[in-house]
Image 1 (cartoon, rainbow, N blue to C red):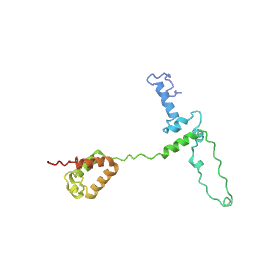
Image 2: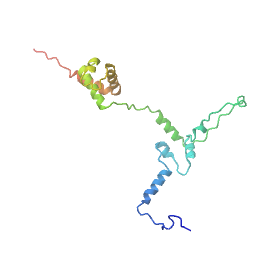
Image 3: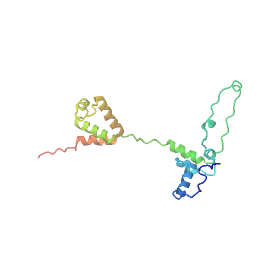
Length: 181
């Protein structure tokens, strides 16, 4: 009777594998990195995911936290008591998350440097004459006057301080009146 394949080869140690690196990889897969710093600091490795989140006052399963109740004929007449809230052992996590969510969002809209240079060139050469801008030889993409106006307005919205300094630089330095005596 024939032998099973790979049975005749002796089990040998593979020196080409880094056991330390393999162990790190397995640990990483087992416990993935938590991106939220508030949750990461309060996390306990000895508890389950559901238990950790319950202690922080967060929901593990949103369907259980806020179930969709279907009205039934028998239940229409009854009044149901509100479910009792579970004990939150780590309320500071919830408070920190609420505080972070209430911060105003930073405006990160910006324009490309090419578009900024294009708009500055057009305004420098033609000021507010959008029809002349449309006929300019540097208008490579053949933008219409309304498209150019939109780009200038977008530049004003996204970079208001830069736009005001640019417009002041176009006016030039204030000239002093020198009177001859």
